[in-house]
Image 1 (cartoon, one colour):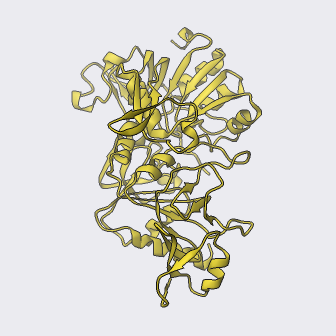
Image 2 (tube, rainbow over the protein chains, first blue to last red):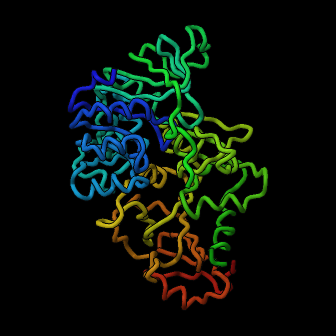
Image 3 (tube, one colour):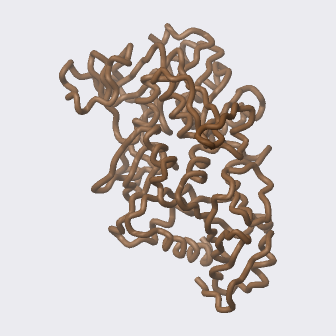
Length: 218
Length: 217
């Protein structure tokens, strides 16, 4: 499934810190080596983990992100010009992805007015208030981490590992979800499903959780 | 932590009233919870999708899927809820967040806040700070009064890129409690042992003093 990702693809990557990051899918993308990728993720993980492998390999042309303060390698790549970075306010990134998933073209918001984040953005007046036009984000591929999946692709998430995952699972042409457990059809009661399998194209069961999924000792 | 700083944290904890929904920024603001009584009825919000943040847990007790926005392993309490990142910021932008306590690089006497970027030195991205500062119903800053070089952080105008314009209502520092009023900074309380003259010398904008008997903390 990862082999279907071409060079130059735009890829949504779930996760906020470790929880919800699809490390297994990312490691396979790093192994295969697709280049010129545009990644969309809340953060840049930490050095040596997750999307940092892709950044170190030079596979990432551009990163759309809200914060990368925990990854000194990503900051160095940004400062040297090797990595193009677009910063987005966290909730606005979520809404741009949700809008993309909902078939909308853009959202209007006053978040970021009076800040650098407004630079170069179209402004409109709506109900007498100035608003920025924030374009919807839709991608070629979404890489999702779920706690439980069923064969239809229904997904359930754990604790703060949901974060961007349910939003990104709606907003790509090809949605690939890794899951810590895949249960038979009917094994997830409908009330437990947060993402309907109608959005999900591929399921990968993670047989053994690698060390990256574990507790980060600081 | 210096004595004045821990008294500042304890004093700032009085901002939190029963029943509030509150977001605490990374660093000093997070420590405010240590000064709330056990079972104090407050709902703490974390940007990564949690209301009802419970106590931090050591590594051997931690749930790998349960962190706060600063990456600390936390727990749930009776009444906690999880939600996705869109819901998390819907809560912030729609006015459901009663209070946020934030750190600062600079605060201006008109309430402008700069706390996310130092061009050429520090530009990790703002995360959720812009939405918190622009939309929380009350924005309170906790900061050392001066930076590490001794330069004032409270100024007539911010020199660094803004996080939000005109939103800071109150500032807690290791020297004073000050409000932002239409006329600029107004002194409310002084840290023990700090004189008005010392405070004014360490502040990069005029400080109004409404009356002569200023309380200390």
